Length: 482
Image 1 (cartoon, helix red, strand yellow):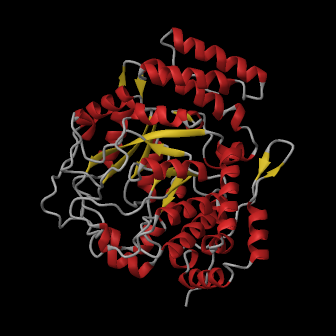
Image 2: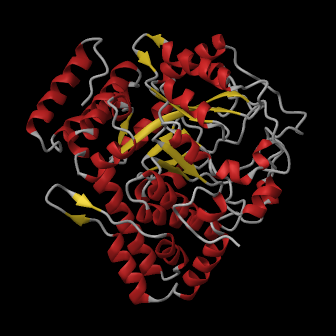
Image 3: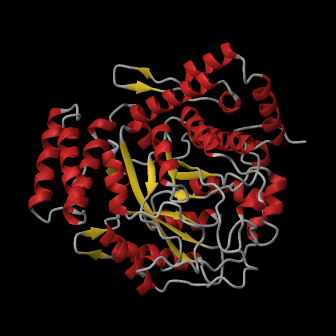
C-alpha cells in the first residue's frame, strides 16, 4: 500500500488515489458548509502589503470544497476573488502565442487523439527545416513572437535531434522586423539528458499535459506505445526540472475522467512541484476534449458544461494564484471571454493545428489535431482584447533576462508587475501595432497605450517606456525591455 506524500518522487505517492478519493468525499460533505467555505474564500483573497499584494493559495482539499460548492452567491464570490487575484498579479495583460505543429507521426495509441498510430487515413506530415522556416516567416508576418512547438511521439521520425534542429531554425529566422523570441516545447515525456538538451537549446517553458491523473483510466486511454507508462509520464516534470528547466507547464484534458478527480490531481501535482523543487508550475492549461479527425468527443462520458469549465478556471486561480493560465483556440470566443475574467493570462491567436498550416491560404483540415473553435485572425483577437480593456502582450523579457522559475515567482509576488511586465507589454504591443496591425487596430491600440502608460507607478520607468514607444513608432529599433 502506498501512502500520500507530496515530497515523494514516485507518481502514485504524490498523486495518491486514496488521498484524492478522500478529498472528494470531504468536498461533497462540506459543499454547503458556509462557515468553512467563507474561511476558505477569505484565505484565498489577496491581502495588501507594503509592496503590493500577497496570496496564500489553497490546498487541494480546500480548493475541492469550492469546486463542489453549489451555492450561487458563493460561486459568484469565488469569481470575484479570482478576478481580484488575476488583476493583482497579472494585471490586464494577456500574453499571446501560437502553436507550431512540426510532425504528426506518432507511435502511441491514445484513444482521444487523431494522431494515434492506428489512424490510417489522416495525412501524415513532418516539416523539413525549410518548411519550418516558411512556417515561422508566416507566423512572424502575423506578428507572433512566442511559439509552442508540438510533435507526436515517434523515436524514428521525431527524435530529440529533430526537435533541437527545429528550435535552432526557429530562432535563426529574422524576417523584416519579425523574430520568434521564445519557443515553448510540448513534446512527449523524455529523459533528464534530453531535457538538459532542450534547456541548452534555449527553450522557454516545457509543457506536458497529464491528460488524466486517474491511473486506471490513463492506462485504458493509452493502450499502446511508450505513453502507456503512467509513472514515466507523470514523473516527467521532475526529470525536466532535474535537467535544468525551471519553467514547466501542467494541464489535464478535461472530459476524459471525472472533472473533480482531475482537478484534485492537478492541484496536487502543483503542490508536489512546490514541495520538491521550491517552485510550482509556470503555467496551467485547461484544454477540453474536442472533435477531430477519427475522434468523437461524445464517446467520452465525462464532458463538462461551460459553467463547470468556468468554475474550474476560477478555482485553479484561487488555489495556485501565481501561475500563468492558458486557454487555446479549442474554445469559442464567448467561453474565452469569460475565462479571461476568471484567471486566464495567456491565449493563442490565429492558430492552425495542422502540420504546415500557416503557409496555406485556406485552413487545412487533413492533418489537424483538433477542431479550432475560435477561427479569428490574430489581428481580430488583438482588437477584441483591447476593446475589452485588456493589453495584448507579445513580451518575452522575463525568459531572456533570466527571470524564470522562482525568480519569476518572486517578481510576481513582490508586486513589481506594473513596473516591469506592464511597460514590456505596452512596448511589444507598440511593435505589433506599427509592424502588423490594421488601421482600426492601430487606432484603438495607441489610444489604449496612452491610457495604460499612466498606470506605471515608477515615474522613471514610465518615462523610459514612453521614449521607447516613440522610438518604435519612428524607427526600426525593436526589442526594448525592462
